[in-house]
Image 1 (tube, rainbow, N blue to C red):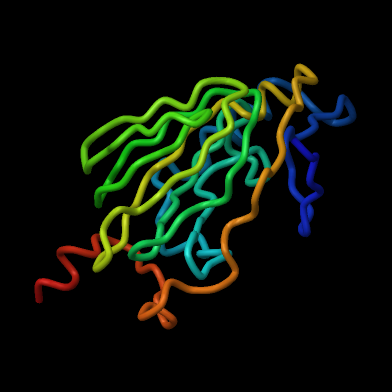
Image 2: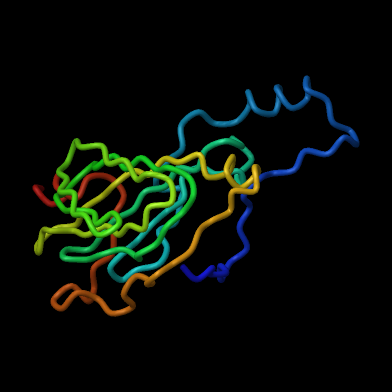
Length: 182
């Protein structure tokens, strides 16, 4: 798998220096941070078939050990084919689809939890042609990077062309189903 550099600067582990630092100050800072991360405060990125937004990572100064993001696949869309050393949990919030892990297909529906095992080459697919699929991804990626277990790369990037008929698709915050029942 080819190692891919990121187009944007990313923070994988936030440094805490000794100058002017105390555990008491750090605890006070951490306890003063918000406990609810508003989806509307986090921007959707990428597209047109795979959209994501980082909800929590070391770069926002709240937590060092976890990375949490939302991913939305456009109707009939798919993600990049990739792999990483850390395990990942994908909680399916809305939709129906499947993953391919090392050549094996795993079907999923809203309410399911998908486990991506370490080192597995995988890709996510939305099986519904008329609505998006949304997953919440939680992984201990920052810890793996801190331990120098940096295996991560893309086999195939997410498509740059939209799914035909969905050229103007953009994800929304909140529930697609409930928003569109009005």
